[in-house]
Image (cartoon, rainbow, N blue to C red):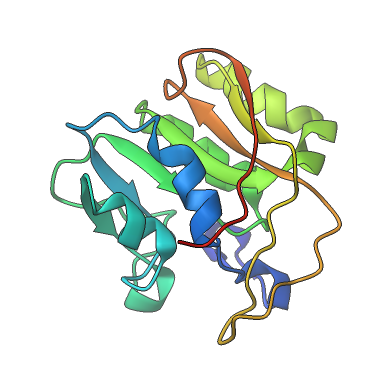
Length: 176
């Protein structure tokens, strides 16, 4: 198997959906003039739905034949925001940082235990920023509204996105 071409694991936990409240928590940091690329999203994604209320959004997904490792939208975009698969996170962050544009990717906080999480930012010459929360995000299971039992907390791992290095925010788990 060519691991460079694998984007999604066959494990169920790679296709979990971000609830609206977790998307809303990042909206205030998006500059109004930015065109946002959501590279792991379909038109049904809460990222696409919520961000498109204020910004132009370009979305792509492997199910459309748009593999993040070798696809980039032809039209101009300014910032990358999404919830990527947790599998192959090292390669995902390498690719995301290589664009040298603002980004915010939702990822497990357990990744901070991996030295590579810091190294990939350091090697890219970009600073790591974290938008952290006081509660765990309850991701949604595919094809249902059932919330998964989450045993880890998540943060947005960012670069050139936040006003400072670490922001701790109260997560309002209210769907509006």
